[in-house]
Image (cartoon, rainbow, N blue to C red; front, side):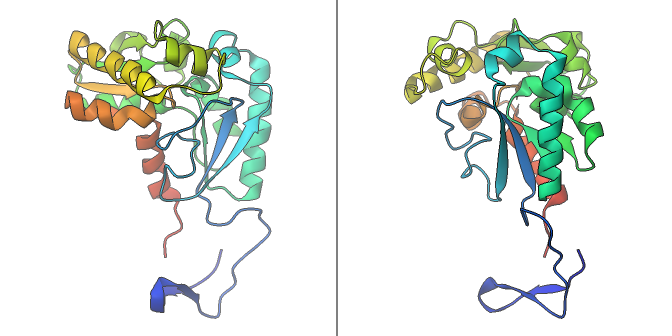
Length: 253
């Protein structure tokens, strides 16, 4: 794109003798999101809620690929539909691509190699940076949707040793499990969901004596602030990674 611009009266961007190149479906859209098919509410603070960020995003839903399949039956044939959708988002004009589930870390390498824009498929990609920032002796915890589903393979895809972190899951929390994991209902009780997520996180931080907490699951992210405020421990999630990547690809005036 070749142009010169400035901010005119009223904060309106003005263009002087420029060529604003077209040929794309989207313009000034920094991030495209590859989404699992799910129908429970996406509150503010969730990656898939368009009001979560101060910048626009677009979404591509992979029909037929849902949470139970990705968590409990991941298969190589899932990769190609994700790659196809990522390539389409790139053609349409997005500047970076992310995923709606932390378990998509399994496919980080393949998707990143298939496109030319930055790809960050999981909040787990932050783990090496978190380790460097907090030091080798720090206790770093991962709160995941399912402790039973998260494996060393997911962390290896993010260049992380399984033994270097502590993992806790949301098993046993019925509101979270029946709506988000099993999809038995498409609505949930927000106060109960908050009680389950924040309570599980706080207990994990206390019992694990954690110095930092990473939320693997994008569905935990709407409650990251409450967890941080009540624990006084740094909390990382997909939104912290989203803001970092956005700062590198946003259209600067």
